[in-house]
Image 1: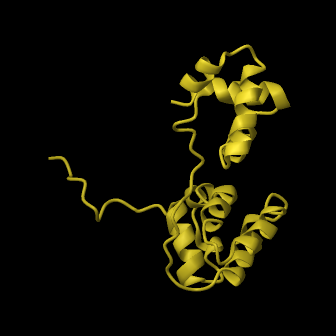
Image 2: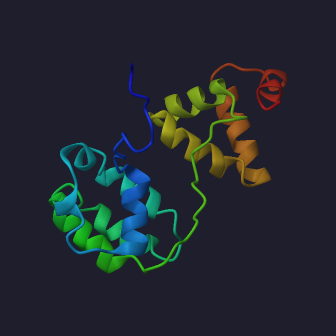
Image 3: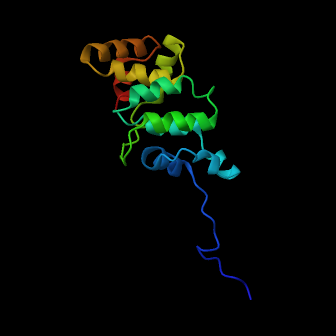
Length: 157
């Protein structure tokens, strides 16, 4: 007879959000020492910083820590964060960089013009589309790559 897999038989491994909740709420000093090898692998400093930086109340502090996180050992990194992050549960909406609605041709033109990557081109695009004067300048930039005025109009639809 086979033994059934029940929740009692499975050991729950802590993941990224468990670590973040622990930093925000529990703040146990020896937490990192208690983690298993598998749990330590899920303690991704980059992702922790990324999620904590969505909190506008501590973004400056997290930005400062992010400059040095690669040089700080994981255990000390945890200690810094529990001292830095205020205690308490908090929901912070995750903001992701979206390219939805941005025509690839427009991004390609911006990349070529300024010799930059796609991520930077998205930032440039957002600046260009923030005002009518800048938008006109973007249209002229695209026309500089051989597109007619009507073709440029179609790119924005």
